[in-house]
Length: 84
Image 1: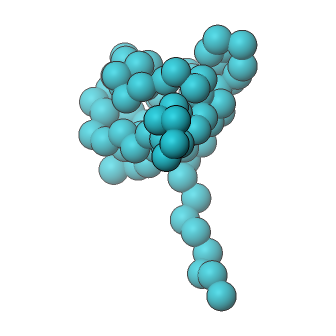
Image 2: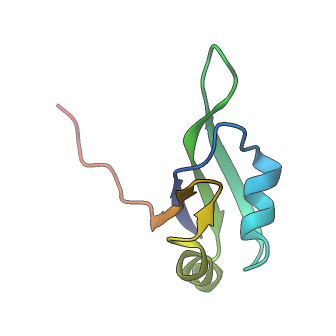
């Protein structure tokens, strides 16, 4: 399974709207939407888990697409390097 980073989401984005965008390209295994603690609104990014070939298709189709007044950024998740 591959994890995709999705950036530039609008503040009113929900897990259902993100799933609707990605399920056109394959089965969505998981969605982790970042929420603000105090307001409950979307922080503007999420992580979506999909199978490899489906993730590549979704990344190709959705990266740079217009969502509201901004362009979506869809990238494969980069592993974090060790912190000190």
